[in-house]
Image (cartoon, rainbow, N blue to C red):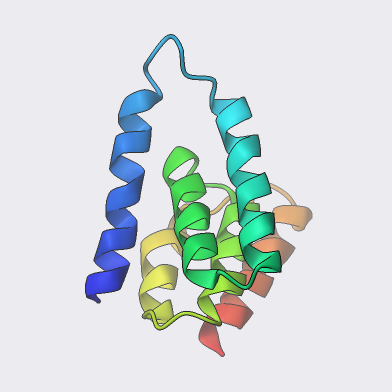
Length: 111
């Protein structure tokens, strides 16, 4: 629980930067995606999960970030049920693509 709460705190500084004129959200998101991929390839799953949660802080409806969190959470000692409770309700279901991604993430998180 303590670790999960610490992960949530990561998102708050990011949100405060979003209003800054110098902050490019798209570029920052791309950098986070690259860092996530590197973290996964290096088996640094704690860092990967933190990055996915940071992406969800940028866009709570982001189905890909939710799937990233689900994948990384398989290898981290965290309450995966809490990830579902915190993020699932906000994940986009605007089309079949996003519904399928959200469903897959939920299956991973529930197992």
